[in-house]
Amino acid sequence: MAGNSFGNLFRLTTFGESHGEAIGGIIDGCPAGLKVDLEQIQAEMDRRKPGQSAIVTQRKESDTVKFLSGIFEGRTTGTPIGFVIENADQKSKDYSHIKDVYRPSHADYTYDQKYGNRDYRGGGRSSARETACRVAAGAIAKQLLQEIKITAYTSSVGEIKLQKQFQELDLLEIEKNPVRCPDPETASKMEAFIKEIRSQGDTVGGVVECVISNVPVGLGEPVFDKLHAKLGAAMLSINAVKGFEYGSGFAGATMKGSEHNDLFNPDGSTKTNHSGGIQGGISNGMNIVFRVAFKPVATLIQKQQTINKAGEEVEMQGKGRHDPCVVPRAIPIVEAMAALVLVDYYLLNKTSRI
Image (cartoon, rainbow, N blue to C red; front, side, top):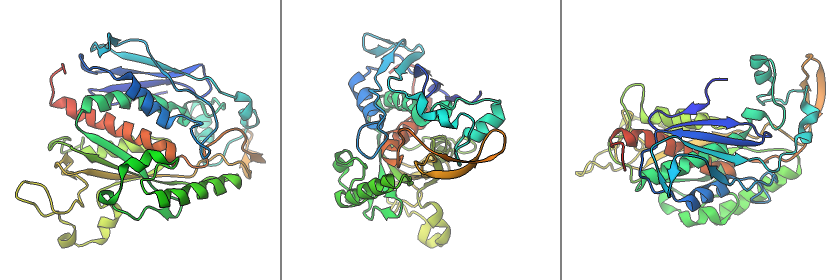
């Protein structure tokens, strides 16, 4: 299986399956001398881990990161950073009923067709459990980025949308509710809706918005390595993601140039930010703003028609512990992948030491 690595100068390779003994990763290219805040790394992991509220999967994992190499006396050594995250609460029997059956809109069928076999226990490598490794690596990338601030939050769940603009939001509210929406009233509606969907054995999607502030001018390359192209690739690599847009996004296609152009201020900043902080593939110093659309989880706790390995039509019903909506737990994953993209471009302008 190819495609298990992400990044260039700061490169993450992940390994492991959802129901194996552990998942983990190797970070190559992290400069020497970075003082690593292990508590901050664990705090990021806690935001993604299962079982953290009543509206997510009730699988219980501490998601404690054990570093095996690359860190000595609290600082990075410049050598590969190896780490593992143990799987402590896997219940493989919950998936025995789909050993020879394909869940609709899941990776079951494509994995089996491509490789001739599949790990049906939780989806193996196709499980979002793998993203815990990304959050661990992203937490280190964030510490390298220092002044750059990456903030993601839930902007919609189903048809319930956050109406306020970023500058109107109290970002301290994000971690005060299980939905991670920075508006308490909207968050309450989202939470109630997710609970209702869960009671029906169904699932629902939503949108994560991410704002990156304090970004220096000049990150990104103008041809194939455009900053927004790399951000798009990063976000679309996350499980259940169906769309990515930055700045004005698809709404920009309905505007006239006279409406869409970001006019300059004398200091080089712009009066509006339809560009989403990126022009010509290069950061322009304004906030980088993008949105990521997540589909409903494919595994439903209700009966559906599908097929088995023999091509026979059969009926199946999901079992086990699943998220009725992935969006709340996707917030730290979106931030982590954004950090992994930015740190690559950041290191292009830095020496090999902190």
